[in-house]
Image (tube, rainbow over all chains, first blue to last red; front, side):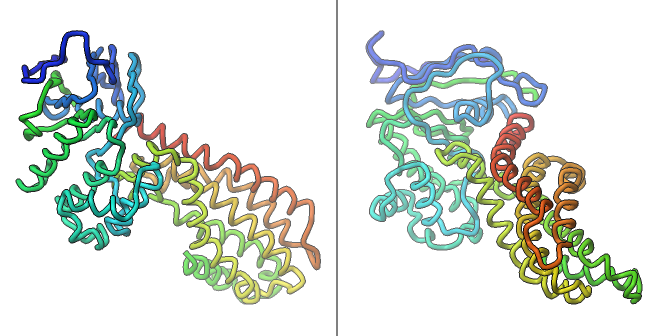
Length: 216
Length: 199
């Protein structure tokens, strides 16, 4: 059911050289009474980008939520060394606070660097500084998405980014900004595992995890 | 929910009739029932907006955890529902001709009781989160547990010129146990809700 397809790239790591930072071994996850992930195995090292693809209902969100820690596997093990940052289907923003206040709050709660200068840098990467001081409930879908993605830039450099359809609803400029954020994150040793229907950072893509047999 | 409280209290004399002999002993129980119903009325879908926004996910993944989050929700709900009720209670008691000697006991008991009911409410709201008939489910879950609070509270409020009675101490004990356990139970319930249905 699950196939991992490695895309040959110019920076193929030397065999046996790269330490594995994320290892998933025979993961089985139920959603209600349906077995959505069936003995899934995957591994990923620092500086790697992996896109999870599959039909709707194949289990992409389930996989990301299980890795993030919101769902518990019925069987199998997950070993993850670096800290995780999860941006799910929902944005994780409070509609009554402004974008900047949301980011500041999450920065403090997660113990991330969140002084004003870093917040401004993160917001300006996605051109979100213009609407960061409006209550989130007044913003459009794409604007909220950009605020949610800005949170990633506050995190530590070697974190694992778990992204669930990060570029859905974004215009082309914002998708390019996301691509460049992903590329610079993996260049500094971070990892990205993203479920996406649209292409994400295609030039830096190293592996694709295909989930099949969706029956939800 | 303050309006709800006042409306229920106003309805009782209308239904029972103006006879003081019938109404006088019912003053304290009427206040307690109205307090219970108006506090619990605000708990339906307490967590729903946060679940939908993905806010709950991030709190659950953060070092903060769902326990402190549930406690914060309880505190904010009490400040908006319980505290105004406590402030209006003397006025309502006057309206129902409750003897003024009972006011100190009534307010103290309502203070502890409203906090206890709020804590019960977050347990119910967490358990009923995501269910289809969440309002009904919430009432079914919480009302049986609220009965001891109601009984001890009503008995504790009837003390003339005294505040501390054995009934008040039992009410305080119920509140203390809930204060320790309710956030943890609510956090567990929210976790289980995620793993069973999920988004």
